[in-house]
Amino acid sequence: MKEILSTKNTTIKEFKKLHKKKYREENQQYMIEGFHLIEEAAKAGAKIEWILFNQRGKTEWSDWLETQPENLFIYVSEEVLESLSELPTPQGMIAIVKMPDDKKKIDLSGGWLLLDNVQDPGNVGTMIRTADAAGLSGVILGEGSSDIYSTKVLRAMQGSNYHLPVIRKPLAEVIDRFKEAKVPVYGTELNPEAVAYQQITKSEQYALIMGNEGQGVAAKFLEKTDKNIYIPIKGAAESLNVAIAAGILMYHLQNND
Image (cartoon, rainbow, N blue to C red; front, side):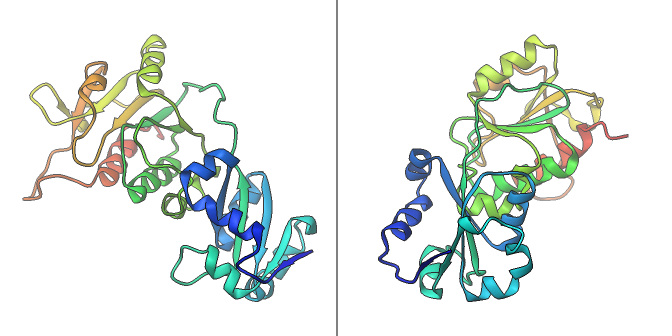
C-alpha cells in the first residue's frame, strides 16, 4: 500500500488539478469524495484507479476496504486529504475514477431528459437524480450545461450517474434522431401555443427538454418540438426552479403504471 503524507507530493498535485474541467478532460479522470459515492461507483463497476483514505477512513470503512484491491490504496495524512477535499468537513476517503466512454449509441426507448444550457451544478445534479428516481432511460446534456464531473454536480447526483446513462451530445442532433424515430419531443415554454402539462398523454417513449435557468429552452429547439408544455402557477410565484419543474414533468410523463 502506498503512503503519501505531504501535500507537496507530485501525485497529490496532479490529483488536485482534477478540480478543474480542463484537467479532467485531459486525463479522462474525475474525483469523488465520501464513502457513499465511492461505494456506488464500485457497485456500478466504474473503473476506480485510486482510493485515498486517512486514519478516519481506514477506521470507519475498514470492512469495505478489505473487499477492494489493495493495489488501489493510498494512505494519506489528514492534511493531504484536506488539501484535496472541497467539502467543509472531509469525510476520510477520496477516489480517482476513470471517465466512462461517452460515445455509446443512444437507445431511444423509454423517457429521456434533455438539458439545454442548464448551468447551475445543483440543478443539473438534482435533475439527473430525479430522472433516476422516476425511472427514465437516460439524460442528455447539451451545449453549455454544467459538467457532471464537477464536485457540486457529483454531490447532487448522489450516485445516480452510475444508475442510468448521462451523455453529452449536441441537442440538435439528438432531437432530430428522436423525431426520425417518431418519438414525441416536448419543450418547456410559457407561450400562447404551449399547453398545460396535464393535457399531455403519457407514452412509453418521449423526450423532455429543460432549459437555462434564466432564458429557458433555446428558440431553435422549441421550433423542433412536437408540443411545448408548461406548469400552471397557482400562487403568486413568478416561476418554478428548473429542477422542481423537471421533477413534476418527468413524474407526469413517465408511464410507470
